[in-house]
Figure 1: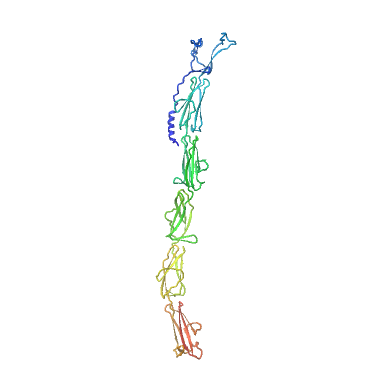
Figure 2: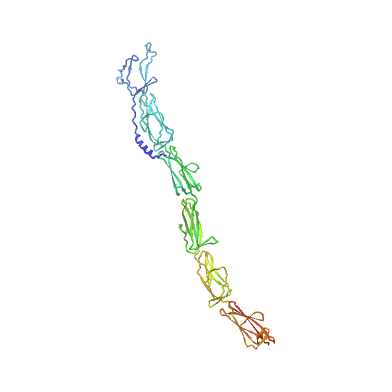
Length: 579
């Protein structure tokens, strides 16, 4: 496109140069004859002469009656005038014609100049602030009329000197013009100069585009962005600006938005038309409409336990990070808030309150053209509290002087408790040995003093402080003793061996001694009879064993049981004398 600044400067210079009328040619007053008619410029003097022969000597006329108005005389009437004699005389008879008739010599006086007009055709026009602008194809026609002697010539000056007008004028440069024009008739009357100023506007407008809203790297657009078009034309001015997408409908519009478009690549076409119908070449602008917000994912690294309630248990050692990706313009920022606080721009990781309890993290991302993703939520439970573990000793067990006594049959269990993420493992070690993972009840072997150290770990690796429990294993039963109230009276030998014989009135005393927990019960049975518990007398009356008159061999089974259920047995074989 032609740069319009240069033509404007030239136009101003031309207007300065040609705003004054150029010098007109000199046009002489004269007599004009056509078709037997004589035309004379009205202000010209007339001198009358006559001759008596066709080519004879001329004699001047003189008026004695009106010397002040003759020699020369001037014609008074526009158009036809007459020079006359009183009566006409027949050329042959030399007698006055009858009926009488004047002789008239016609002469035409013309003191009125021609009139001209100018016509602009073939191009659109527009008038602004008193200035008329014409577009391409302009043809300027001049026409002149004269009612008496007729037009001799039409003259024009178009930003230059005067020239004869013969054909239509066709200005082919973009500039300011002044057309001066006039006509002369055949007797030298000169029309007053007429002039018309106009501007030839041959260049199309230019259209600039501006963006209202967010744009990334010049051609990635937000769906909320608008393109504003500004047409510029330094001459006739812009009449209308057109814009449309891709192959859509051409419409007059000064701005355009992207709300009807899908995400992806598009083209907007635009151009302007000025007030004299100069049309700009269509401009195209290729762009990408980014309507898709970023995708943001949360990552929990380190201590984490996801409960069935969809709550993530974490510890203060847990790292919560956000990663975001965008399909086109790229991520501008990631925002988050904790428990409804003011939003923060995400940096390296999210810092949670150290207090035990439920926390809500909301987060979203925005790309470089302002597309914001929907806010997502992550529910986490901060668990900084370690579990607590109780040890449970089953039966048998017995406390003495704040010492716990158990046997190798005693089952040991742990009862861990965690109010947050729950128990992951319980570990224990016996007598400062290697740690083992608790899987179920167990027992400890080996007589004597033992210790169990134990602790639990929850599902986010909060570890309990080690607890040590000490206890005493007693697997040794009581030692059984018995004695008789009197000495044996004799001994009896039989096929099984030699046995002592006690009188029937003898009392047999039973007892048991346990070095750790003490004896709980003593039982006895006679000759495989029912098991009887020793009463408070701590003795057995042998008279009740043998009520016959003959001697009787007695087998007495003694069972002693300590407070842990450890049992010992002893058998006594002897004879009881008859009553």
